[in-house]
Image (cartoon, rainbow, N blue to C red; front, side, top):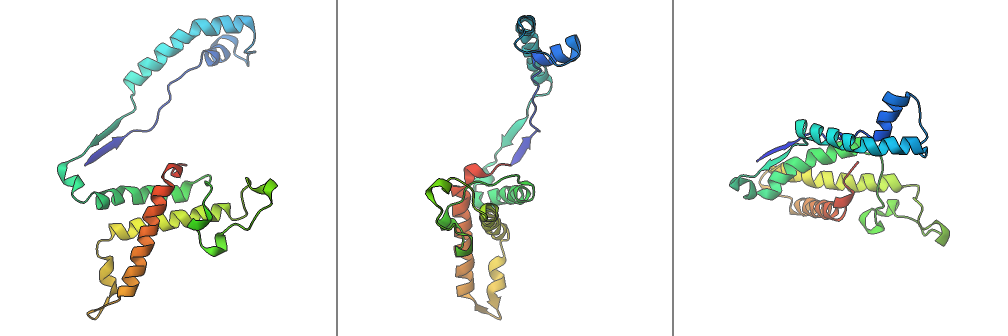
Length: 185
């Protein structure tokens, strides 16, 4: 598997920016008829510059999948997803709403009055941290192929411990699917 994704680029140069920076050299009134007339004339130039820069510096998104990548795809993807989740946890700037059924009792919302139902609770961000921690736990154990060996104590397997870890992993993967569209910063 090979994946190349370049940084996101925005090459748009507004006609109003051109007028402000190069023609008037000051902030302009966008509703001025003269400004509107020149902005209309400069729009094709702005579009040309954008297309040219997109051609010179395109956004690269290349993914090559080899047949062996799908043999153990859950494990292969875990190696990609885990570092992304860990980075998101460090750099996140917000948090989505998390359902009460996905957090422990100490993070559940108390019943709010009707006029406060759409507001965030005091533990809004802690709830999202809990969900991210559960996802990271699941993928860390998925990446570590030998984790079950740690439950082998002198030839006796701790089946209850293994079952608890499997249940927590299943929950982390479930949360990953449920909150997939919230995995952005």
